[in-house]
Image 1 (cartoon, rainbow, N blue to C red):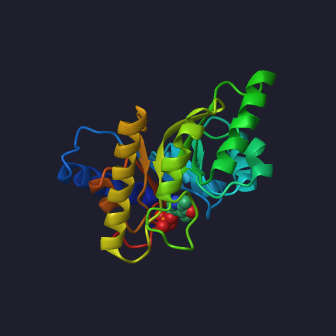
Image 2 (cartoon, protein in one colour):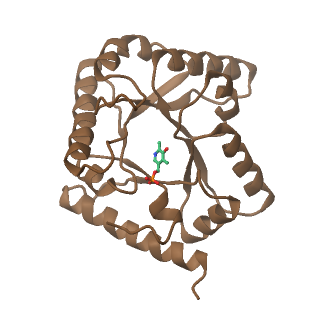
Length: 244
Ligand SMILES: *Cc1c(COP(=O)(O)O)cnc(C)c1O
């Protein structure tokens, strides 16, 4: 029987092939995209297997689990360089847990949360316990589904001047989640995110290079629509989850 490590290494090769093909279809063959392996439902052993398979960027959605994974990996000794991103809903009382531990916070979904992250980061920088402003993405509810969190597009447009003044955060781009199970709606969501980014870029002279969108069921569509960061959970860690 094949080991879990072998299975996810084979799966990774298939995913990378799919990513490359989607980029080629979009005329983006020379671009790099970041593949975030979303480890929220697996343990440290699976993350170690994923490191062995070549993954270097991981995503967690709960601060306590993030800390547990980081501590578990630290005990494994010499595993080569990796980073973790925060991809989920972040409560203000957990901001200090993630600052300094993650490379990128994908899920800043309100001006209130942006203010809170920025002020805590400024304080930590002043104290010397954080090296630089926190890299963040603004989560936008492009599809408008009531169940989804994030800024409404008009809210981002209105808040941008304020967000740009916050010195404790660096806004790298935008993030969204598409409706499940509807490819056309997913494509509209991803293209809508890109168009909003282009608009904000033009209007405010920002770069906003990163578009974090695309999950196990829709990452190829997301890449065709300009995604620079895909967040893949089940397709990475569950070898029996079918690549579509
Ligand atoms: C769980 C999760 C993912 C990964 O979902 P899959 O469908 O398993 O790939 C991506 N992004 C966020 C924000 C998540 O919570």
